[in-house]
Image (tube, rainbow, N blue to C red; front, side):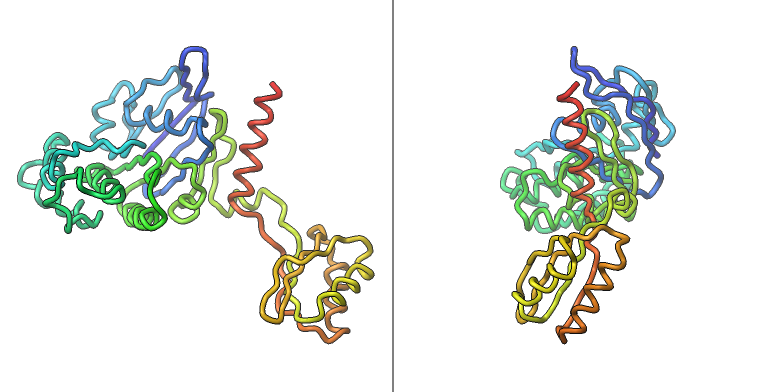
Length: 317
């Protein structure tokens, strides 16, 4: 549905995009993830025909974003970071207006508007002026205008920016529902948006793609963390015997619960003898071993590792 090849964008002497390439298949929900100023919004604006690229190419549903801009726009639903709403209009009038300018046939217009209203949960506010709505409902109206013409591709730029936690959850659930019927590209710098809503993540930093894959694939690029052991036993005795047995392997307390304590054991992955020795120590002392797991890297770890490295390289250059 989307093909990007060697895309570049210069703003004067500043290069916002440095020849990025990626593709999005039909039915995917792709998170376009990166810190502020990474090039996310620039990419979204080029894909939607709002900006012209300086170099490279991009196409949507087989149509070039420059040569066939109108065909591309017909196939895209776009929600910019600043939701474009005519706040003096009523919700139903605004959606009818959007359906009209999007070329929805008159005989199909009511059905199309009804579908958008149902998906976005707007039935209670149809008769209200947009200016009266909360920010969460305004965002829903913005999403409704993006889908009223039933486009195959949705491009959402920071759709939860400025919302409170409850509104974020509501909009996130809505995006998940939209992902069942549309190909979605979701630009954000919120990691939870990608973790909860996306099937794949593209991480961009300093105008370059630094990672592309599913959450599991990206997390697998980092080594797994330390051991986490949940033990029911006397804390002082556990720490003393662990330090004696493990010969300098750092052991510390992470969390204390109701009768149990979580210990962090900084032993590298693959060091089976240390793990076995710890298990034998617990059994020998009659303590209860409630859990023994290797902590897993998170998407946040991957993001920080890649974007901080890219930032340091740019500063050193």
